[in-house]
Image 1 (cartoon, rainbow, N blue to C red):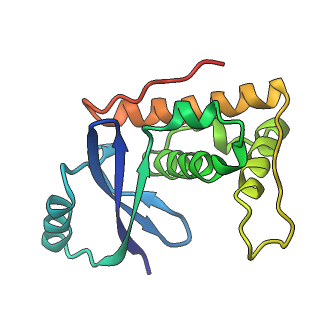
Image 2: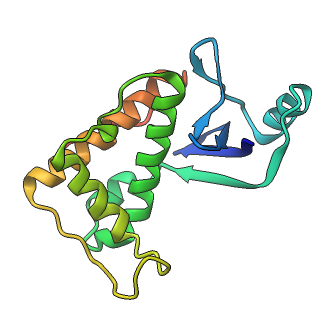
Length: 168
């Protein structure tokens, strides 16, 4: 059974709300081959009620405003959770829209970057030893390429909510 959650995206002074679901495959609600976007949580809750969707009490928020600071951080391990959450959101969005996303490829370099970010979150349930990833130039370029691909996917779905892309 699918579980539905409010999912808020923030960038600078802009915020939108979507509805994310999880089941065997996670994704976002779409309409007319595009991401279903609401101006606030109340509008999303009204939509859910009208369409018989039971929203879970928990919600998620992804603030994209600090990405430039995170990408230039000396302590990248503190940024891993934000970067991997952007990766997850872009992957879920791409599956919802049936479009390709660079982060979902099986290329060794992409997978290496993914695992470094994932384990760099230092989830206690996964291990007792902290991991602080380092990236060579090629890996970092791949990380930026995946991030930009995800942000481009998002930018193409939300009119007036344009997240700046990043250069090395």
